[in-house]
Each structure stands twice: as C-alpha cells, then as structure tokens.
Image (cartoon, rainbow, N blue to C red; front, side, top):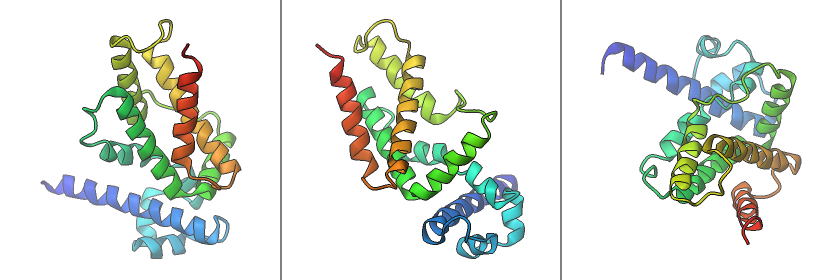
Length: 196
C-alpha cells in the first residue's frame, strides 16, 4: 500500500471514529450538551482532526449517514450472491442495526436537519443501498416474481422510502421497539396484502 492509500484509509477511519463517538455522546449527554472537545476525547483525536473533517458540531448530524453505505457494503460482503429476496432482508438487517446503533436521538436530529435543508440531495442513485435494492428487483423481475407495470427503479425507490418511514416511526416512538422485527413484519404484511 502506498503512502496516499495509507493516508486515505487513516482519514476514513478518523472520520468514522468521530461519527461513532458523536453518536455515543448524543445518546449519553444529548446533542446540546455534547461539545466538540467531548467528541474529540471520545474518538481519541485532536480538535484539528475534527475540523479537518467537519466544520461544526451541526455538520456531524448532516453528515451522519455518510458512513451508512460503507457499513452496508461491508455488511453485505459475502451476501451479494444470495437470492434477491434474502439479499433485501440482509440489507434491511444491516440498515436497522446501523440505525439502532446511532440511536433514535441521533436519527431525530439528522432528520430535523434534513427537513431544514430541503435543497440537499435526497438520495443519490449511485448510493450502494439504492443500487443493491435495484439489482434485487431487477433479478426478481427477470424471474417473473414481480407484478408487471413497475420498474426495478420505481420499486427500489419505494423500498428506500419505506425504510425511511419505518425509521421515522421508530424515532416518533423514541426507539421504543426493536426496529428490524417491525420492518420485516411490515414488509411481509405489504408483500402478502397484494397477493390473491
């Protein structure tokens, strides 16, 4: 590995450490009481390292999901050859685990920030999550498992919005129930509701 790759890997790890430390402290102290110094101490980084990656405490929240796709890509390693329906369930499991680890308070702050900055990109079609969903629906379509009239792109967009809706409901209930079983229950209900 050359010097540039080592630096990039270290930078990525530092950013991840900062985000994980912030998430932990938000759950323990609350966002308003958490300071940048608290985050740096928890992450084991300098304030200079913090400001290299984030311009402010608020930016931590707006960038909080930037590591989601990295997490999902790692979690899906070895699972990309599963049948499409099982792959979608594995993706939902990894997504729910990540969200629960961040905690409902962090997720609430994230969505509050997103609602006050509606001009930001809602979801890039290049994101791993969306690409994986679309590939699953493409395979299901080719296997004749989907009702005609809906494209894999439409279905992956709908699925992503349903994931988001599940998370928002979980936030509204202050994380009062395990997210994954509820997601699976609701998706199964939706799946069977439209079958004769």
